[in-house]
Length: 326
Length: 260
Image 1 (spheres, each protein chain N blue to C red):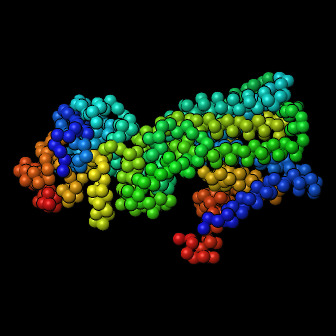
Image 2 (image 1 turned 90 degrees about the vertical axis):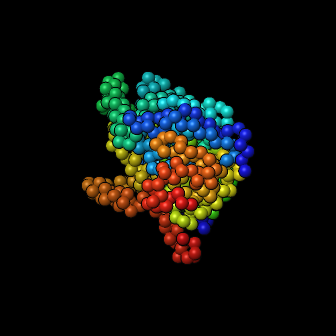
Image 3 (image 1 turned 180 degrees about the horizontal axis):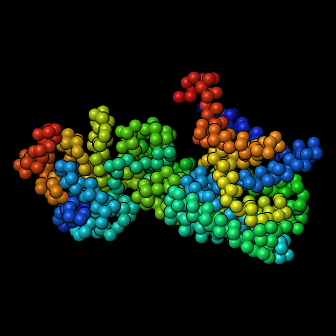
């Protein structure tokens, strides 16, 4: 019954096609704004996808994932401020700094569970926020303008909006593929086993702490990559990038789209940010509309939009062929 | 059926465990021959589960020795004992409820397949994990449930899945803690049938309240009372043992537990 043309697969394919063709639409209709908006969406989707690795697949409720956006972004911003523009230096530094931060936070926070884990990840992210707020050399509270985007070898030019969009999109799809491979590997099974029943995993001989820590570091590193892209996109980085509400936004994207699914976080990011864009055009109090909408999804669609689409597919299949559904 | 001179698979000597003033295991000696199904029975609070926990490594005895297939295993944590081939099933079912039935068993296989820092190959298509898992499911009679979420199985099927997970590591010996607990008559019969099929291949230590099953399956029976062995012998010897009848008299009057 799980043919290729389920509602879920069709919707996902349409979304991918839409994202790939978006610059064409933007060029043809001269809509420059939509390209800027969707570049931002793609970058934040990358952050959500990386959060999903620990939140959805690993069951680690990190409330500090925006910290990696900030660390990746500041790595680019600070190096640019010091006159180092090469992406071959900036991006590895961004990845390494995020990985290191994740390693330290993970090593400490993964010894705790539940609310304590949430609070510790939040506390570390806020510490990072206040730390960069205090860096007067790099703009402190006001943030740091980046006058030149990361330099790579010609003809790659990140200042070209279409090129930059496709770079972000390629990285996003690469990350989704990477996480799909990871979560289906032995490593991924060990991480998901630890989410499901950690005591049992330990009893049968899995050193769960190590697997969870490695998972945490991979997610943080990908989050840092999103940060490097975000700073290039905005030509600017400020402490606000890593404020705790941003971590909350990322969690909402993952939950809204569908936890522990390959495309859920992307769907969630598109849904949330497009909705935000549309609603804020209608009214200043758009959050009053967004709030209840989120509540409905959490209450009635546990698997998020992705889960809703699967359910829809199953319903349709039952109607066409009653034997299939049960 | 069992040659008496066979080398013991599992041997405990002078085992003792106290919890405060309570003596849970009292200078206990137990020897399970290779290939036998050895049952441990006793009234509630006799220390049966405590004994299993010490044999499997969840609990550290205060004193005594445990040898498994000739090796001293007293200092080994549970998973190392399990790697040596001493597997246990849990009295309280502890599964990966949101994963599929096959995934549950495949994880148990993976636990015995070295470290899991393999990031790329699809573990769900890895025959080194999937084939032994399917084989274990088949023995447990659960192959037709392989792709179901574990949460959707009945209680009896959960117990069988537990058993399949214990079997997945290809153990030499199974420690079974009340595998029939909470099963209906039909499911119990299914479990007895399965244990009977297993006992030709494995050494089994069975802790069980269901006397009918114990007397039907066991080659030898050890009776525990207050953490102490009061009798060990063939089922007919145990049935005839005056001390055992006395120890069980209270329960026997109430539920006819030992009149089998």
